[in-house]
Image 1 (tube, rainbow over the protein chains, first blue to last red):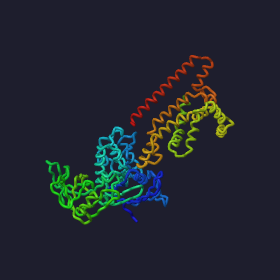
Image 2: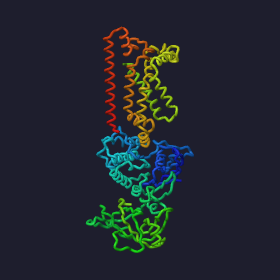
Image 3: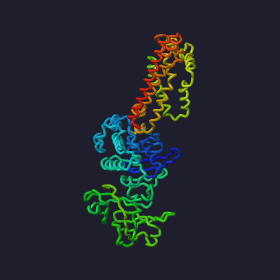
Image 4: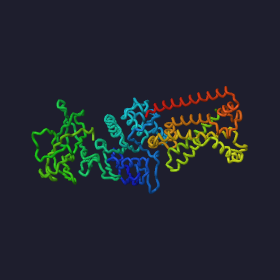
Length: 366
Length: 214
């Protein structure tokens, strides 16, 4: 049976911590291993790279990298992965260029042919001016870009990213995030991205594996999962959001807003530098959405979406209920108090107006 | 001086794998090995010299081995001195190199592994360059310690001119025979030499550390 993507199944004990997790990831795009700190995500990533030995099976495309039942275990240096750690971990005794060439030279020696041209990688990550510098003189964001280039230069079949933004300041985070989006668009290499941050995952991931306590909670296309009321962001209920595609229809530069079409409905967001017709992603937090049974008038909220209630969840010992609303082009989520639910008599199938207090731009394309 | 040079070379060659093993191994008995390596730190050099004399003499195992190669015995020869000095100075070389290897941590080696470097390759391309300050300290300590040693050399060297005569023993001879002037010259020379060596090592280490940043 030929598997096109990557299939992993690990089971084992890492210093008293039980891991038992199996998942598949597509052979392209970004798959996020998403879970709270200490849920075993990094352990899985290390096991995939061969840095940690856990019982299990790992197949990448047609190649079996590990199969405990047949005693197959490729040592880490024979697994063509690119691994980007939390800290860039550049070799301090080598220049930026020598760092990038470290993996490249070894890959060329092992396979006999030149992988991706060094120049392409360098220009993709805009490192031209840094090539002769020493790693110590670089900013956090620059270092992480070099680490990305180094991982890519060894022509990996799989790029593993272990919270590559978590050690960076806000500016460095934006810088590296933008480059990750470029790589996502330009390269065909599948990426496995470990994170506990909803905002990062919402922006980058196509596919999601939700991890908790070393076990898989859910798995599927990222946006579909976000829309499901079963899904809670591991970093807290406040972060729970959906991500939807919209098209830019124009700007009102005097009022600093951009107009968009979201399915059949019109919405506005704070001004974004985008051309008319551009596809953008929007992120809507559940806590920023209120519901009304009649279209409200004389209200400061500008974005009012028409839809139908498609699901309702209540949580034990919580005053809040979660409501999923079908707005035609997708589903949004709202958090409403139980009290208000009862007053309005909301139930599945009811038409409602969703009042969106804020909607944030979440990147281009999608 | 020739003795110290050769001894340092031998020390680096055998001290490095020992230091690497002590730094990386998870074996519970490795500290016992570390203690054996460290014994010369506390034992009087004459004790060490005595055992070496026994081991290397014509009746000891060393002598037996030498006999196989047609030699008489290793005691009172230059080769014997090298062996004695190596054992005596081993802790001074192993300890700094071990510390340097430990300071590197797992991460750089893991990075190298994911970049396709085999364990042997990782050792030479990452561990050794990053542990350079430790090698420098180890080499200089080993060298100067060998230059300055006395007890071991006296026991197994025999002070044969042009063969096993070393500086520290020479000073002893001058003092014994009340030749103060040459004793002053040699002793003062060694103080100056030691100062220059220790000082330049400290400066070099500082510069290396500065370049790597921390």
